[in-house]
Structures are given as C-alpha cells and as structure tokens.
Image (cartoon, rainbow, N blue to C red; front, side, top):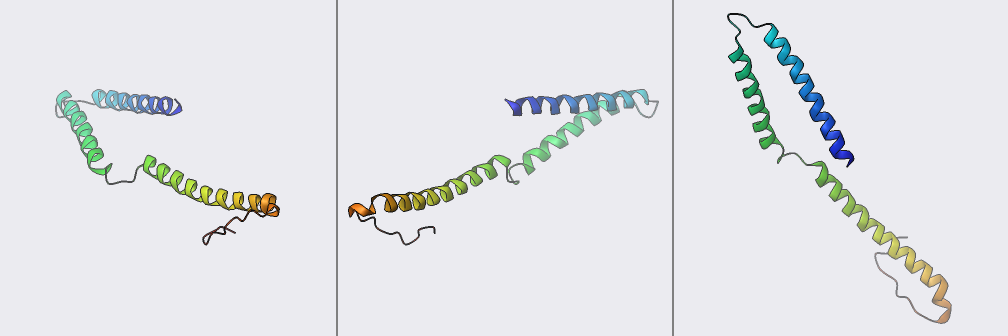
Length: 109
C-alpha cells in the first residue's frame, strides 16, 4: 500500500511541475512561438520518454529482480546455518543416548 501512495505522490508532483512549465510556455508565446509548437513539443516529449522507457527498462536490472535474488541468497545461507545449528543442538542433547548423527562434509562451523 505504501508503494501505491508514493507512486501517486510522484505522479501528482510531476504533473504539477508539468502544469507550471506549460503555463510558463503558454505565457511566453508570440508570433514565432505558437500554441501548436507547445502542444507538439508536449506530445514529442511524452513519446520520447515512452520509447526510452520501453528500450531501457528491459536492459536495466529491476529492483524486484535484485530483491528476489537477495531473498533467495539469504534464504539459502540461513538454511545452511539452521541445519548446522540444528545438528549441533541435536548432537549436544541426544548424542548421550547413543543416537549417531552423521557429520556433513559442507557443514558450517
């Protein structure tokens, strides 16, 4: 829910910024700088931003991809640590009852 709120605020702030820029441009129009120049420039700017986002976004690593990779790596490492600690606990608690717990080659020490 927090992401939706921050994205909405970012969208609103960029639109407010755009409105002020358009007001400034429309206030400075003259016989060489007409309304259609501003409108065409606005559409060209949006088109360029859209095309760049379509080209660049698949190339850049996404935040979600990095988060998934980091979560996976941390889960694997925590599982190794848990297995090692569980083995130590079970050996300490139940080895006296002649239950042999086999040692692992890749155990974390």
